Amino acid sequence: MDFRLTEEQQAYRDSLRDFVDREIVPVAREWEHAGRYPTEIVEHLRQMGLFGLTVPAEYGGLDVDAVSFALTFEEISRGWMGIAGVIGTHSLSAWMIARHGTDDQKRRYLPELASGELRTGIGLTEPEAGSDLQGISTRAVRDGDHYVVSGTKTWITNARHAGMLPVLVKTDPAAEPRHRGMSVLLVDTASDGFTVSRDIPKLGYKGPESCEVVLDRVRVPSDALLGGVEGRGMQQALSALETGRVNVAARSVGVAQAAYDAASGYARQREAFGRPIGDFQAIQLKLADLATELQAARLMTYWAAAKLDRGERADTESSMAKLFSSEVALRASLEAMRIHGGYGYSQEFEVERLYRDAPLMAIGEGTNEILRTVIARSLQHGGLPGP
Image (cartoon, rainbow, N blue to C red; front, side):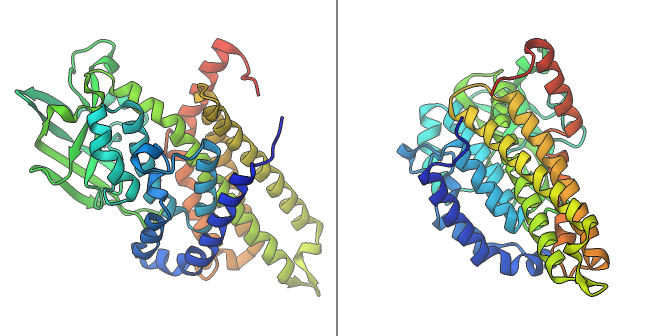
């Protein structure tokens, strides 16, 4: 087993790290507190080609390997996790179209998604259906060569900047089992009846918007059915979530790294009783635990990503990586705040933002409680996964 990054992956990580330290870190705290949309940073992401992370090269994308995909979200989240959200759901949507779209859908959307000229997200969650995607109520009724779509989606990142949004709908509500009646439609956000009704106020994850979207009898051409066949929406969405969980696991590693860096740096600078607090064993033990858990989370994330790179199913591994890494991010942000003492509670230091950002990873892309059941069912059917 070789735990080293390739030379190409190392160079890619180093270029990302330089970009984050130069363009994101200096403005993250100020812009996040102001609720300012990171327009300039998003433009740099576009220029770097990062909107094309999951788009095949033949359509102008980077088509990065899964480990490099994880590196992208780890490094960006180390600077400001909210920025990762701008390309996170975009990349998930592009991956779905590249993997499941018709040839015409790929030609129509992927080049502009790769360049960032066309932005997107993904419309899965509803006010009454989050982890239970089969419980969605958004309907798509066939009317000639169109579908008429009605429903509400919530927690939609990029909703105000998306030109097209894949939306999970029920095309046959009476189907049994329920997933056979679900499909994904590629909805033009300029369509009559498509409304971004509000931005949801959030504890953290600021920068990108998270919105509620209302579809009121939106007419969607039948050729916008992802893959061209009804009843495959649930499988299409779940297959994308393997990649999505690597994304969230990597974000968690980035936040945990930022928390460790902040705590370690503060422990060297802050003095108490005439000595740096890092000289005291109580602080040393906290830092040792943080560093150990951080590295374990990183290796689990790369492990899941490497399995995707081998073309193997990785729903268990990606679930494990997301579960463990997000819990590490939560603990790391809290311990970093404790090491900072009273200053950790101040908005003048980075750790309070990390403390507000970390909980999202334990909730998003499947709550950790749901993922524990996914992992448990997998273990019942096959035992512990191999390396």
